[in-house]
Image 1 (cartoon, rainbow, N blue to C red):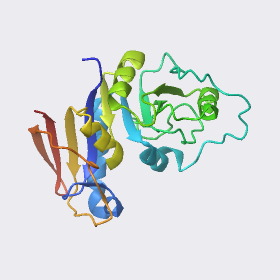
Image 2 (image 1 turned 180 degrees about the horizontal axis):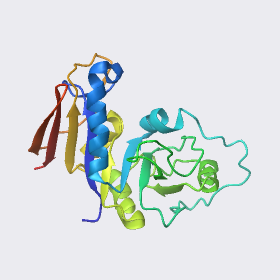
Image 3 (image 1 turned 45 degrees about the vertical axis):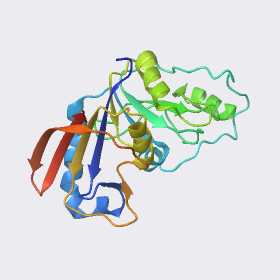
Image 4 (image 1 turned 180 degrees about the vertical axis):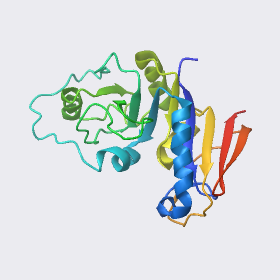
Length: 233
């Protein structure tokens, strides 16, 4: 295998939604606690999210300030490894490069996320100024496509350049759907909260395709929470 083993790990509603107001209901508190417990238990080499999830969870919606960038980075689209000694990673799928990181690693109270070195996964449609911004902030980046991100290329580079063997996919429906269409998900870890979401909530996969999985295990938790674990058939 020349790519990380990918586990899509999500909290879902009964009807398979993963983002929406339902997550803030008291009925979801236990499910979210269990989600973080399982996250830590997997002991993955990193976790991956799309731009929107990274904005909501880690950058607070901040955009990169390029006003003080005087030069431009190498325009040959060379990958950049800022910290060769890093062993734990936060992988941001940020197609055109907009996330406004302030530091090169995640600072989070939860040990399942804290001190993860940031890797930006970009397309070649990213501005040279943003690449220089990432270099100055000591954030690693890789290119995985021209106008859009090629999931297969991205995973092969995460494996070969960073030694990543196990990756938790914890993004929203768009990035989850991209991984699913690329047949890049090896395992599903779904913590089901006892609530049905509203019409504006987003599904587990956006524009998914038919794929077969087999049940690995079902675990019942207090407060009517269930953990469903599937592996690729």
